[in-house]
Length: 397
Image 1 (cartoon, rainbow, N blue to C red):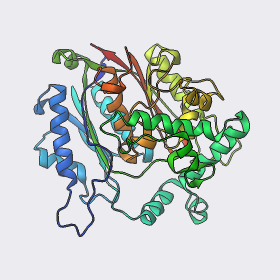
Image 2 (image 1 turned 30 degrees about the vertical axis):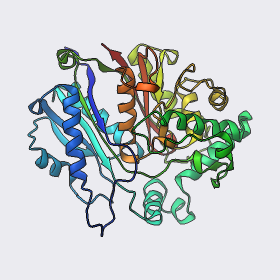
Image 3 (image 1 turned 135 degrees about the vertical axis):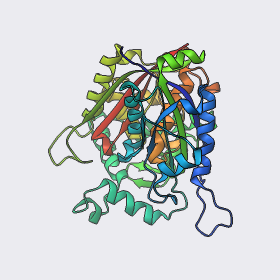
Image 4 (image 1 turned 45 degrees about the vertical axis):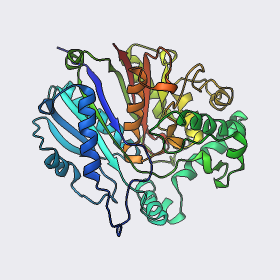
């Protein structure tokens, strides 16, 4: 019998500053946050503790105080599992891989109910320490790191190339940030919810030209838990659920910036992964009703929306400026507020994407609800979309 995977429960904390400094009188403990989220997600799912047989954690950031976190939390929860208990790591794709592995355990029959969860704590770490870790994680230590080549610099080069090739303006890119902040204002999980104007976006200090402060993601802490199950279990709960309809993956064989001349703004891995996911789901890009994209900068949302076929090539920035990707527009993108406003706790960011789609497709998104949303698209990435992991989700009542 062919199995299908469903999302049946979710829980998350608001993205923001949760980590305490080392000498704080009262410490925030990661396992206390995660224990509460597991209880909330399982309650939302309508299953029992003993039903859980696989748990896939995101690898915690190096700044997380409790090491060997996954087995430590199992002890706190008093959970015994026969499927899998593990941590996964894939840089920006870490949370998407945790979700993917939890799906695999269900598809392989190792579990009927599985958790994908994680916590990302970094807000009390100095900017210098954080950036050094980021550069050594994402860059070539023989070339990028000594040159101080930061992840935002890749995206800035993408932006310059896109503006050159397609005539996009700084204001059109800024419209993505304005739109995402408007969405975030309706999301209680978002880190920044105060509205911003296009004039404010353009006037902000540059981070790496042409990207300014509001074009790039903030640092923040976050934690989320998703409960996945077979469709049979999902149906038995009697509640709306979200079916995983398609999955696509592609790694283009490069590391962040290719040393082989290529179409640097084509995001070929995202295009191919999306094509595979659409084929598995039996749909086309035009069928997607709402998308949560892993897009650390405004330009990345533009390029991924084009690579996944949601917007025509060269039209992503214009589409944002004209309201096509806004709630109420043709294809709402990043209704959660996206990485620039909802926040970007990197190792769990994709979990928040799935949480948003689970809320949208179950009709629980409140003010930011996409009317009659049936199909959702979630993307995860490695650096500069040298690799992409994409899922198509479908609402089930």
